Image 1 (tube, rainbow, N blue to C red):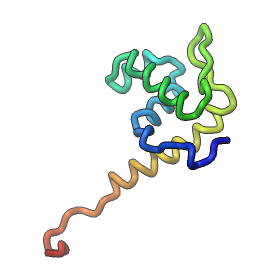
Image 2 (image 1 turned 90 degrees about the vertical axis):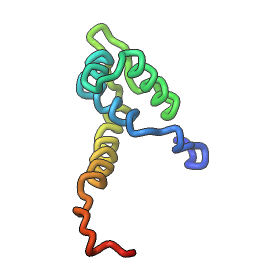
Image 3 (image 1 turned 60 degrees about the vertical axis):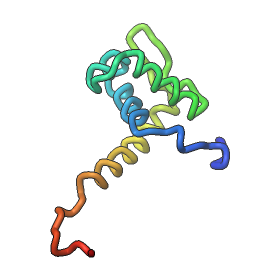
Image 4 (image 1 turned 120 degrees about the vertical axis):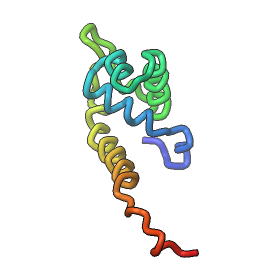
Length: 103
């Protein structure tokens, strides 16, 4: 496992996490692209960036699609939790009330 000092979190964006989860669900880059409104090459590029970040292939190409090995299966619940937490922070904001706003 790499040391935290070797990891540049600036290289990570939420699209990569969503692509990862899409591939786990669909096992095909074209299906993920269609679902996300991206091109297939954009999904492939995101997968390439994920592979570089993790230093691992993450998915194995098979005749029936992309197969997740043990690492990808282990990462799935963690990445799902990260995406859920990000979503929660964006959705769970309190409604704007001008009387409670400091001036």
